[in-house]
Image (tube, rainbow, N blue to C red; front, side, top):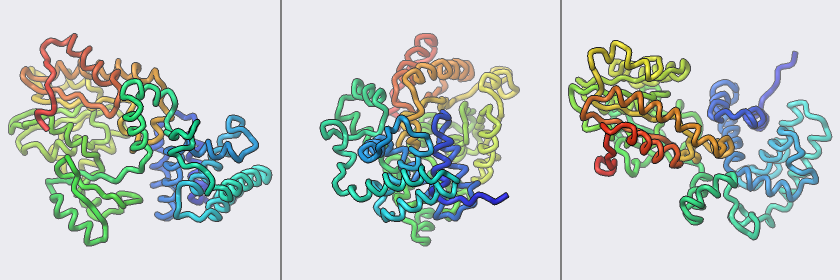
Length: 422
């Protein structure tokens, strides 16, 4: 049996088709490109760039394709539409790729995937027509009805944000979401400092700048490719983490030497690692997550950064912590962080698939789980202790409404303005 030969375009095509309609986060598919494809680093980078470019520019790409395709998009098979989007994003949005390569390599990918001649000819002809006429095409800033901006977000979501934030602010949010994010690192201050790591990067020709509001953060504006290839990664000198994550951790402070702290939704361990580095040596830190895969990655992250000995990790549900030996005899926590599962509408720039994977009912659906986590955590906090609730969502159903409902049912807690501590 002949082994299938993958290219960056064919891998991007397969990824988009597999993801479409799955309802799953794109990150899992991206991880397969990075770790399992067997392609060279440059090819993997291009595959990821094409996938993420299509997700960020999808509405605009569809407008362009519709101008030149005789077949309506709604009648196209997922593979056909994905191929046209991949070709169009190269022609219209990626200047460094020549139009001829964008067309030829996309069609070649279809042929290598065994697609029929008529389909390859249709995609070839449509893309060549787009390439010939691209200079006359409007850009995303005025390609919408009446020369309005193309926002590349679902209409229901932009309408929702416009009602809440106003037209100008809604459009600003969408514009930011459509930009490629710069890589943000959190420096492991137990092994190095921001200045030393920046100097190490500079020696390798890697540009970095200090984070603009979080201590120990470094921004790498030009970095592309796998973070594992960066100098210092294997030595545990940093982890990928946005600046806001550091601020959420600081809200548990000021930390005391004999304090007990819990990361109640540890996930992959980004905030757990920050807390482990921030806490005094004498303090105790616990982290809990029930998912086997996430728990394994949590362990690996702590071990790579030399922080495993500082954290007691538990693979279990949060409600199991109350009955565990960690909390017997009223041995409760001075601070608990609940970084709750949410719809993630505040991190669409980093995860552009979120905009296409969400539905209006998802916001209310998240509430029950979020309130349950807070209810459980409330029983584990010492009198006078701190309970930090954080999400990466913009939506009031997952933020203000959750906090209001929690406080209404728990009069032992009072809301504190976090700006006093940052």
